[in-house]
Structures are given as structure tokens and as C-alpha cells.
Image (cartoon, rainbow, N blue to C red):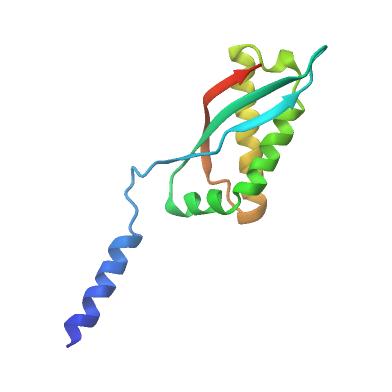
Length: 125
């Protein structure tokens, strides 16, 4: 009868163990934002994926996703056309967005959790 109780405890220990090479990517819904431009109204549509290293980080990103989306949209809407056109500008934007995501998680959870941020699509129209 004791064997029935011991097995679930072992199983629970195995579930909590995270492999050293655990990497997970979280794809966010597409972001669509108007941005500053001379003349006609312009918009940006981009897909963002973030990289996390633990299941706890994955949970934190999903839990605070609305706040993260808000911060990303505010940054995108504040950009000028010249700050979006070149590859170098887009790389700088990705770094800005990563810092914003980390800032949200640091404020809410006490840890930055997200190690990298990637654009998986980027369209300006």
C-alpha cells in the first residue's frame, strides 16, 4: 500500500526538473500600430517572438502578456518612419522592445526572465 503513495512523489520530482538546455519561444500575436510619418497615415505590422529559459519564465510572460503588449504597442506607435526603415533601426527597435519586456517582468516578478526578442515578420505600409 505504501508503494502507491511513493510513486506519485517520485513523479512530481521528475516533472519539476528542468533540463539544462531548456529553451522555449513564445510567439506573440501580431502587433499593428500607426507610426509618425509626414503625409499619409502609415502603419507597422510585426510578429514578435521572445525567448525564455525556464517554465517559470514561460508562465510569467503569458501571465503578463496584456501589459507586455501594451508597452510594445506604445513604443511602436512612438517611432518615426526613419526609425523603422533600415535593418540597423529594426535591430535597435528589437533591443528597445526587449528592454521594455524585461522591465515589465522585473517590476512584476522581480526577474527579467526574457533573454532575447526576435521579429519573425516586419511590414511597413
